[in-house]
Image (cartoon, rainbow, N blue to C red; front, side, top):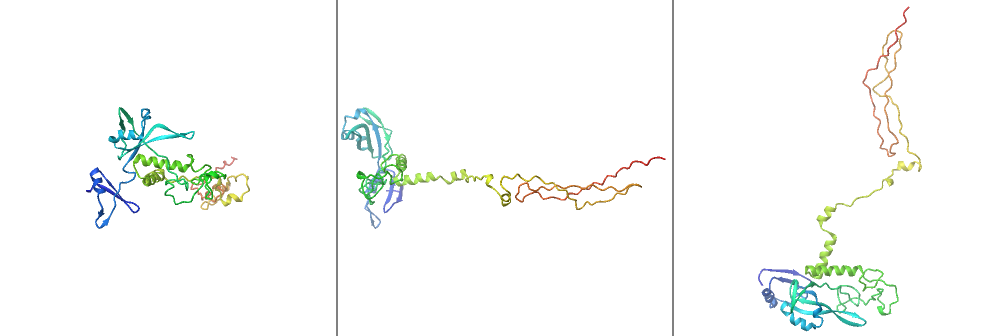
Length: 315
């Protein structure tokens, strides 16, 4: 088959993707790889795509007639969508076409009609036995479950219990389209159809996108921490009675250690004047957390001023 192919190991199988029809034909003819016997079969879903056309002029045509007229457009199956009303199925103008292609054509020619092709997105498959999504009742290995309440001891026809979904535990039956699990499965199928992936690959990629990439996490940054200032207290704050006013600023006058009282020589008949004390301010009780300003010793290097005495009276 050449070198232009992709291979992926699955559970017990090997998925091989080739680029053209001759490679596919050669691969289907293989019976052994080396000394190992193999069986090659086309993939059930990856080799075909399904689209929808809606035409009123094709209402009177049967599915076989439409298929015969569209074989040249690589159409291998045709199914008309029907609606059940009053116990009877009524045909609609919508037709599901299966193409033996890897991508949908934009239009398809049906006689003189140029029909626009839209992607067909199926509804999630739900098992009628266990009420779970993703498989049918033929391949189900689970227990028979009621679709209304999720119980396993009776069927939905005779159920009188409270409604409860077995998939999401919500207050609705398992077949309700408002179920979050049903919507999640619908998103997976939509992603699968648009990107032509398998069901498992589409589910894994959607889960990865929901988590976000590493670059997006870096751009978001760490979560902001919120804290209430009113709740940040210290043991010292709790010791005071609730509702008491804060302590006022206390101003204390301390003597500078390097500046002491000194006498200044004066003239006759005068007494030495005292040097005024230099006050230093200490702040206390500002926050109540033991982080008040520490009083610093202050020192004045200015010389004391000499006090002038009035001149003696003249005799």
